[in-house]
Length: 429
Image 1 (cartoon, rainbow, N blue to C red):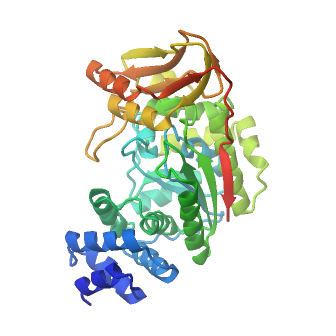
Image 2 (cartoon, helix red, strand yellow):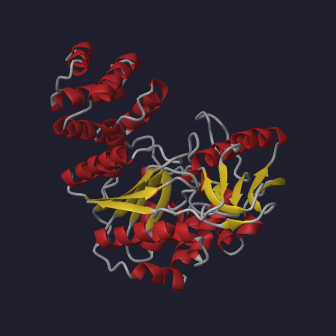
Image 3 (spheres, rainbow, N blue to C red):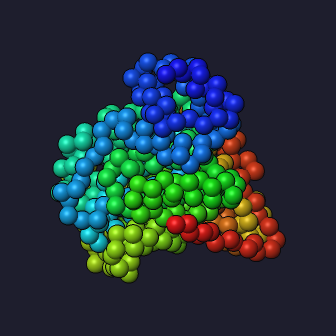
């Protein structure tokens, strides 16, 4: 086969055969096909899309580019959850032990933060000693022992995605729905799942700003999952305001533990419960049992167990304040007038947290787990002039100055109480 001919055909809106797509992905993974050739193909896909057959073949080729896990010997329904990313989105951390305590095996592979959105792995690694880098054998051991595992993608799992994602990030093709959906679904299908629940976020703090494009992405991923006989459901959720009251890494772990204690903020609890109930339904388990894991403490206990098994300090579930790292300085931002908080822009808060050191502008940037932002008010709250709205936890004054510049215009206060739209927008199956 010839890479140039295939690029030209896709450029001219032609279709690629499954065996041609398999060759493309295989050749790119082993280095036969160059980065600049795959960049041209990615741009052709970005501009012209993939039809249903091409998308199935592309996802399958990505899936088969490396190791595919086999958990057939684990006698539990195997279900995972994936979020397209947002600001303050720590849902996976309380969700996994809640659903796992109901008898579901959760081989959860998560990612790192980049840009204004946080990463589950970065948050977990703020727990002293916690390791998210597990080879497939250790991944299986933890899953067998705990029923859940919270780790990153191994080197041998879907290597084509790792190469292609880095290329897309450098060539302006990240937003392609076929490439997004095949990237996400190839990794999830490699987990040998029975079911998958997707959280597709929409709004200023999400990658998807437009409802119709978010619907298209959700439907595409649900279709891929169902074509592989994996029960797949998507919830569209709103991400115009940060989720929960904490943005950062260590502070989001503390808030996740608060959820497991039954003390979490209402918006975070609502999204966590909605996704958990969907996971249990997909697994064939009564969704009402989810709340019982909070009431009887089994979810918190399971989180403590997986923290210890993955090398972390289990004392974090009893005293997060003592165990988690803390920033040495803080600065409050207060309301400049009285009224109702009508807007708290998730994107700007996420970028400000990144500038403090809680996130990455580039993949090689180092995370400071202690820094972040605490929200004292959310849209709809009545506030008084001088009342603190945000607290910035920081280490370096220069980074604080950068964050404050980013937050200019992020907060709006109005005379009239705003109408707050629902967090849960739509369910797609």
